Length: 606
Image (tube, rainbow, N blue to C red; front, side, top):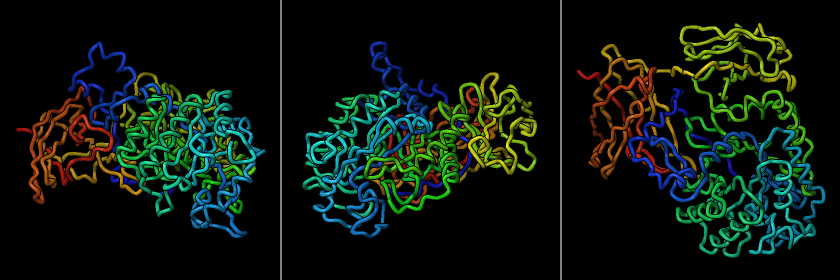
């Protein structure tokens, strides 16, 4: 794991997913293909398409997204060291990478295996703690960068069964405990291995190339993990810099054995089924693909650190509730790490934090699980999610007038609002132009200013807006000039990025620009100004779900332009004209916009 700064949000405009009718531009599957198509992912063609081959179904992806909150466990030989070596603190990096950071000779580090006897590792107790925290899945480090394996592998004796006094398969123990308790189970797997003969040594960023021998070793272990531990909900690949062919090999191995296993984006080269943010990072651009935000209790380490300062557990509880809500309101999943001690016991502080989060979720979980991202522009009081029958408003900061102002919902019918957990006390949802407002002073059991933040019953209260019919959202729109024309800059657009490319340091790449326009005319002349590449390129303009393909010359000149006549479709998008620029459809994950867009002009057709 490493920390990375996520991409920059250049605009805060609202993106509403385009209608699936865009897919009608391409041939529908024949009846003979129907059975196979049920297992495929069907995304609108203005979005990246998955790679060909077996993979999770739409139902699997939805179920994965519905879970929202899970437990990460970093545990291994490094847990014995606990961030210490030769009586001294090692603070230059994560403690789970102490072999490289101390540094320690491989022989001395391997000797830790003879001390590894975690008699206090209780998988059922860990699963019970995860459930008490409101977590729906667990992912454990089957193998980290140090190459030590928490599972019984035939590829090396360097594992908990063959090379330690413990003689037990920790991955199997935890997988079985999850199965007994009804939690989904996943494994973390490092594709770099500092123990493998001819494998890797530490380099900055851990972006090591993978040798062919190591690739074969990894594939053999992936087959073991996907064959002997029951259903694996997700495999959390990490680090290394595999070639595209190696990433494909890893992904194909997983999906051949278990097609419904979700693969993390750190399989690299865009072969993941879900994007992974940087360590303790969140996206600040639009996200269309499934994604997950990994977080540690403290940003300096994931593995156990004996000398870590652990203070203010209530503050840490509030911090992680806020991060969970922020991630879920953006449509992602949140996975929070614990680092057990060398004897296998859970750090009491971490257990206290998890139980505190669970206490809050016991009251407010309805607003988290199975919801989708906030559908309107940012609000000044906090965050929002959308459920099947309600909108949920998370109040982090009460406005001075004690009224929650929500933009763009004046055309949606609501029942009376109430605080989640207190449905008997209700207030009207009031119209305010194109927006709505809710006065919280009329709600019983609303925390006072002094009580708010004090405990799980008063921290970040949630207001429920029951839906009475379909949800209609008026997006934040860009206004036309006096002559009805638009002169659009990329900085005004919502940016959509490809994550998890060639390796950890690979920058996110832009694949879509999206604008919402207050377009009054029906027909426009649209001009795209761009910086040409050296080769001809294909670019798609999407207007209200209709595709206008453009062929761009590869002049190599500083600037060029292309003109197309477009038509406004108010039936598809009654409020705003939705304008998007994407690669030529259909395009696979990782495909960037083929040119640099300088500006876009629209003039009403005369």
